Length: 230
Image 1 (cartoon, rainbow, N blue to C red):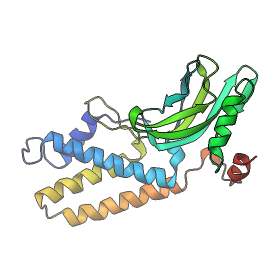
Image 2 (image 1 turned 180 degrees about the vertical axis):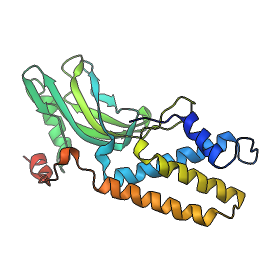
Image 3 (image 1 turned 120 degrees about the horizontal axis):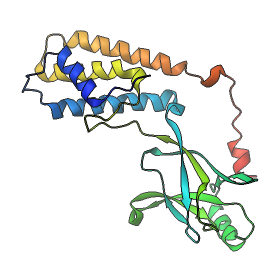
């Protein structure tokens, strides 16, 4: 699958709309429309099939440290899971959620020699936003023992070589930008362009709705409540 660059996307739009020499809609404005389109597609993807953006990253532990920044490209702080794996020691790092989570955190810190790690998400303005607080503080320094699974943002484009990472829906992006250009110009084809945009959006929705990894459409039972209170 090819991932079109910003240069490729902009060139096609300008060619389709005969904007190569256009001064009324400058390149930086077209760039803004392209990123608007990516944001719109991204919102639909996260609503209908958020695992499209599922990815992972290691959390670099430092002995004695409890607060860690989330990945910079995380979408709306959406964590799917945190796993600890060191040789044969493998476990899920669970989030402290219940009404007694603060007491639980204090007890974990007290017995830190033996307990599995747990975590909470903290909105810390001094740290610049949401952070992950580990309980107890890390007992080790390791770059690979903890893996965060999370939902990421779609790539925003700025440099000419930046790649759009939702290539399945590139036609939606093209059509969205064309509509925005027609709106600014007061173009007589705006109505037709809007209809085509609706068609591209519907196609995107249908594609996302039918996306099931590996053809397995078994519905998983949600045991989160029982796991978090066990």
